[in-house]
Each structure stands twice: as C-alpha cells, then as structure tokens.
Length: 97
Image (cartoon, rainbow, N blue to C red):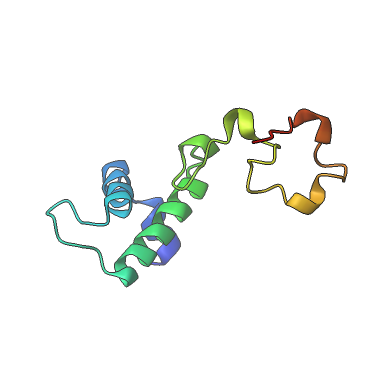
C-alpha cells in the first residue's frame, strides 16, 4: 500500500485524532509527540485535507485575518509595500503618543 492509498483510506475519526494530537502536542493517551511524530502527523493531515478538499478555513494552521486582512497588522503585508499597489495607505490612522 502506498502513502497516497493509506491517506485515501484514512478514517475521518483517525484524521480528527491526528489533528487533535498535533494541536495538543500529545497522543490521546497523554504521551507526548516527538518532533518526528508531529512532523509525520502534520504531513498526513495536510495531505488528507487537500485530498478530501476540506475548506481552507477548516484546515490545520488556518489563520482568520478577518478585518485585519490587507492592513499593516496583516503579516503578509510588508512595511515596504505601503506605498505600492497592494495596500491603500489612507486606510491607516496615525496615532501619536
């Protein structure tokens, strides 16, 4: 059985268990995940989510930027881009202390 076949046949409850283990850093029985176990589990979860077309906002590692998306508070916006086409500088208020 290949890795792809294994992930295709992965039971949704096993997927949820792997996901929870990654989030908590320990197995359901309380044993701590090793860095290698965490890495392998994360790869399997990501592969499962892509294969089963889990919505982006439900995937492991998703960050909801909400109203901060596209603002200076959004880490995907670099400070040097403020004068560029990606961000409108007029959306920011200057705060003086």
